[in-house]
Image 1 (cartoon, rainbow, N blue to C red):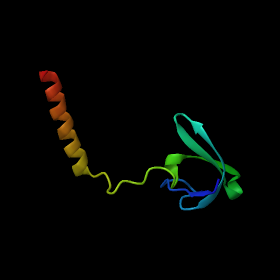
Image 2: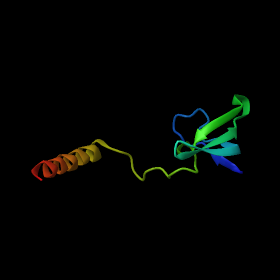
Image 3: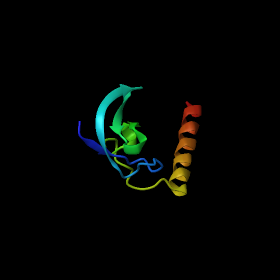
Image 4: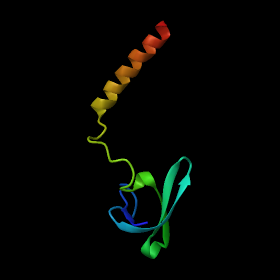
Length: 82
């Protein structure tokens, strides 16, 4: 099965390479059961590992949220006009 790297920013094993014991489908996604050293086995969703989607190119900023809010307001206005 190989290994993976924990990428979730708040996981205590972030940055660690773990040996994958097996994987399962759960809730429409994949989870990996890994050897976690002193923690025993650890179950990680795909998105918390380097096998998930790559991180966004840039952080979500206040300015981007404001732009998104403006777009949503326009779309709501268009929907109520129809």
